[in-house]
Image 1: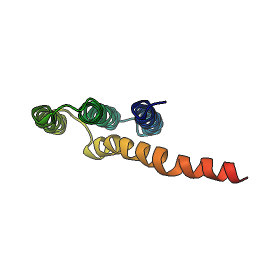
Image 2 (image 1 turned 90 degrees about the horizontal axis):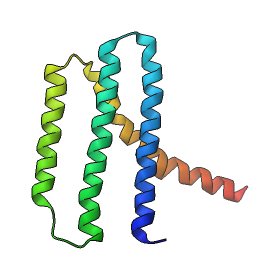
Image 3 (image 1 turned 90 degrees about the vertical axis):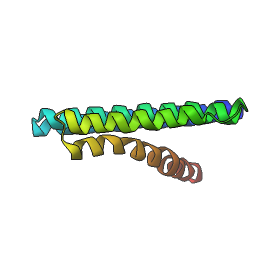
Image 4 (image 1 turned 135 degrees about the horizontal axis):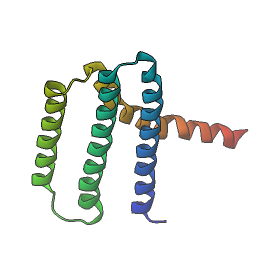
Length: 127
């Protein structure tokens, strides 16, 4: 298996884990019976996962295709991200804390996949 395939597999597992965490948060948010909270979680999770995928594609092309840095694309990604977050927070009726929690699902997915999962497999290997 090549380095690119291994890294793609790791990053895909982060995306999947983040989506699973988002679904758990969405199920937990049903307790609040609030549309703005549910919408904030959904939009925050979707924005973070799509941003991760876009960043992953930029870095993948940079590292594995050995082309010049996609500076314009990175700048465009940043402008789009800031615009989307601003639009969501200013014009849509979302709960800002729920939006922040939705964005944090990616961080939790990264923590789970790169810290907790290897520790678990290491413990199982020793047992």
